[in-house]
Amino acid sequence: MHVAAPHALGFGDVKAAATIGALLGLALPLSAVGPGLLLAIGLAALVAIASGRRLIALGPFLAFGASVSLLVGPLVGGTMM
Image (cartoon, rainbow, N blue to C red):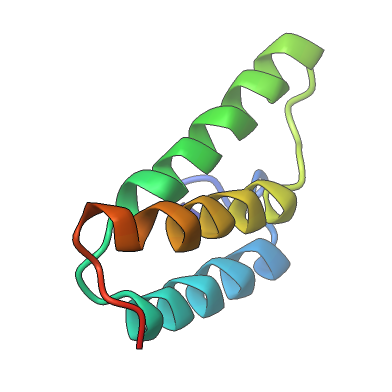
């Protein structure tokens, strides 16, 4: 995402996304991590569109998506290590 639109995504969000993805991959290797984080990015896009802002912090939405993944992941077939 940072490569596609460098002005819209700061390196803090890039580092947070990489860290969250790595930790969720270790904790729930077979879970619905992707859909949880996709939900987070979709919510961030909706908030940005509704508020009319072009720049929005993605970190809180990534944390929300990670939380959803941790709660729902084990229910859909993931195993918690």
